[in-house]
Image (cartoon, rainbow, N blue to C red; front, side, top):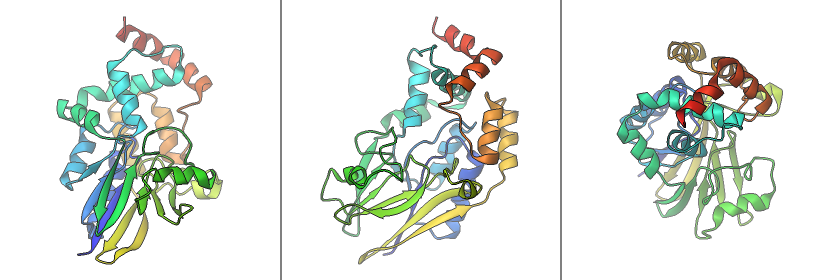
Length: 277
């Protein structure tokens, strides 16, 4: 049997992009779906994203750092001196009413890593490192030894991860295969001409009875104006920042000076503060 596994990651609340990717994957004859984390935020998508993944019978779900941000923001006290924490909490509480209890329970149950075996190949699946779903340890330009850390289980043949928003194929020091499918909702590249391509990214991993055969890195165009209109209709906070993500691919998650200015202007800091008093 030939397996065609869609590797989906880093949707970041962009329902329109995920819908386009799923439609493309069906056309490619995909036989399985693995989701590698960061389904929610800063886009307006909520329970509709879970429904899309369920419709194609996704059988692997990994919890990304933005899932942790969301869960923390709805259940724990926020550091209101941190503009990024205010940003995340404001967005989380905006989509929270559109989530079901089953959605929340699902997020809590997702592991940060797992292992699957396909045609005798052991595949490690994580959002970032197997034991840590955040940080820039596996950014494409980091050292080889960092990528070797994906193979703490040295019996793995392939490691699949996400988080850095860059499609990538490379090897460990022992030539185990490493794959990153890129980002569906927020493609990222520091080189300006490449950053201009904002199509949704994913990959299809092909494995037959003999083993690994092919990795198809795919880019899918989608209606970014439609996604922006969805965000505007939902009255998404920080709409100007989301528009910038959609149109030019620039993110401001850690731009604390800008976020503090926006938080003060729109009263987001006061609003979040009232949630926990």
